Length: 251
Length: 203
Image (tube, rainbow over all chains, first blue to last red; front, side, top):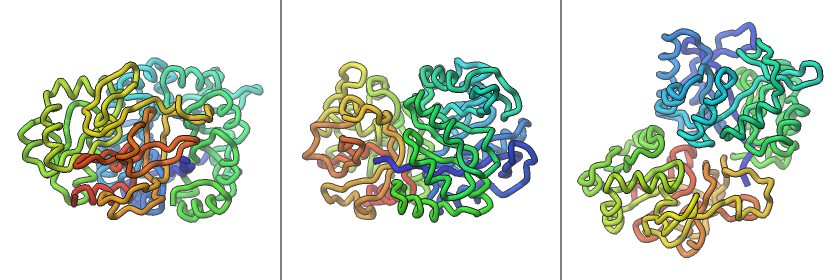
């Protein structure tokens, strides 16, 4: 059977990896190529790179880094951040990305999902969503979690999958940065609505949180940043622990 | 030199990078003479079978690939592996290259558990059913990376390894004479994939 995937996420700004807490207060952490090497050696199943640069120079720096990573790391690479057009898909795929994640770009222009799926295949298109509870509803947020779109997140996911998104990354703003565990209620709600792979994001604080996550059906992967970056949790140890708990992992 | 057939299907960056990382000389080409001069040929591919077959036909390389397959090791990867078979039933019926006996069918239709997700995407363990020089550096049970919705059937005599997905033994590696195929992506299967590519280069 398929192994559950453990995915470290690298937010890259001006050529460096940064990680925010509750999306604010970014602090510099390390060199992305070094970190990619480290994670590959420690058994990461996939790497996610988010380009959180706004400037043109920063964007060029990002694609250079991506190319360097893809030249020496041979596991699936997902790239997101600033993806708005098919040209953006093209730019990162040419640098070695396997999957491209759209978030605000799809909110601004939902047709990007279908257009990209037709051109590159469903498996290439990842719909990433930042979601927060508002008035008893799971609400879709834009712009890195700062803006309430008023859209029902579950409806948005169903629509995105219908248009051709082959995977969903669900980031719960409510649990992000709190390290109190993944948002299992929100993830369950999503798993009941879509049949594509779901990557859980936001809230990982310990190995037990991953074990609990994978007891929930329909969740394929767990994504985290700071607990891996700070080496609070080692991926190899985590995967051994999960296997001992009866979760299939790639060791 | 390992020639990677360039017919406008999929991203060849990782494949050529992985061969380079192994110190192997490689060239992405659609030149028939280069395929003839190469020691080995890799037929890559992602996307839909019919579209890929049409693009491959448009290069005029089909007879060259069929002829070279009798002379040197050829490796088909993912859709490139599916193209090796007699035919595929992905959105209609399409002829394959006829280099490995068998056909390609819908995985979803074969799965008893309809809640299982298709595409079969992610890391699955490889069960080696027939030893082969291609597995010189790979052990039974190692994980490899798959992304596909169709899979090869009626190819048991050629099957070297499978991966279990629900009720189905997904055909993972096949061989017929000089022709090998992997349904998974060795160029995305970490160290395991690199070791498999190294063995291919030594065949």
